[in-house]
Image (tube, rainbow, N blue to C red; front, side, top):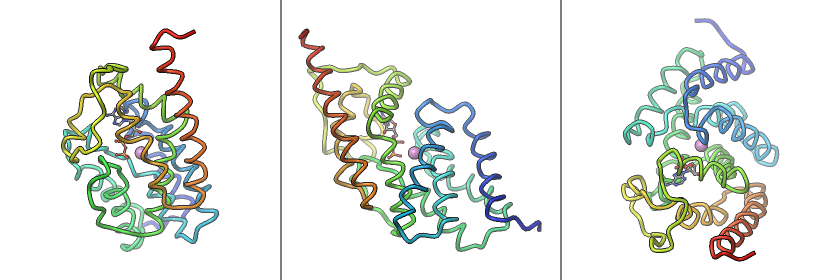
Length: 220
Ligand code: ADP
Ligand code: NI
């Protein structure tokens, strides 16, 4: 089998991911992956991690998100596995990356995480940062539009006790997602760098929500 350098494997992974995600929803497309990849490299500067695992884990973390595959959580890991097998990588690296893909997601936050590693923590923080701040707001309304949801409905209050299946099936207004996920993330960050950036982006979202309600209520 051909032997690839780490740089070549990363380049090959980028090409593979760009192609797989060419028709993805705007909040889960190649640019989301690119931002998460950059966040991962930034957070990794202050952590002791296997650089290959975090880089490939970040690039493949949303290769086939279950919510775009009828809830099937096995499609992503399978696709990643098939691709990684062509890259002549050590088995333990492949397994670690698959574990990251299987465990990175928030999923309502009420599901126990089965796998733990510093590398997973870093990719998870990097992904969570992209759910926050200005980009987080943009992605959330894009997703709501993609699902044809209301922006806001004062009669439909957020549900903070959803099971993973209720979370997946929810068709609540987009504003509710701030309370059901986005505003909870700052207290779930794993790394110091992640916590700091999340705190700033959290404040920005709070300001956005204040302004949103003020305008909704007809204030000048
Ligand atoms: P995770 O990978 O942590 O499970 P998701 O892929 O579910 O995260 O969500 C990524 C982003 O997609 C969210 O941060 C949000 O912007 C958008 N999104 C997901 N679910 C919803 C929802 N129910 N309403 C609005 N936006 C959503
Ligand atoms: Ni993601």
